[in-house]
Length: 158
Image 1 (cartoon, rainbow, N blue to C red):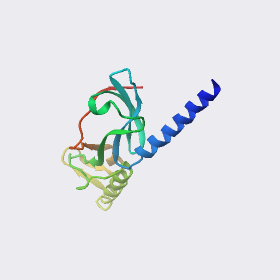
Image 2: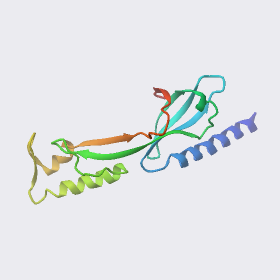
Image 3: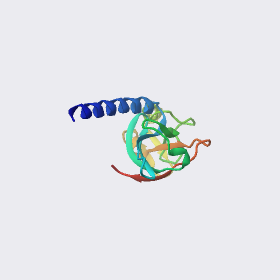
Image 4: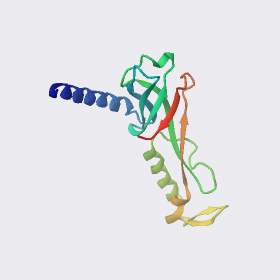
């Protein structure tokens, strides 16, 4: 019994390292199979964003999902980030591939108002630069892969 537990632990560690390697692309949202129940009509996936675990989802199997294996990616999307100004427009024309890049640009954007000493908002009036970040809204866009079939999911918190 002890040997089978060691084997299961080793298999789980190998699977976890495969999943982490598969999930580590900077700006991808990935659904990775963690368990395919042969006797059930669903499988379990872990959802990763930017390589970080977010939550688990149960996915109803269709014909294309019946033979997936643990560690296999069944869905992936591109995620882009930006910030919305107090007046409702993005602070940069281009979106960013990581939260860190977006945050770094926000800091530069706020610095661009130092000479003026404040941010002038139509909605809020003069906003002190020390408070400007709290008036900006973080924006996250998920861009679906048009060539990918959408799995039937039930999101559950585990």
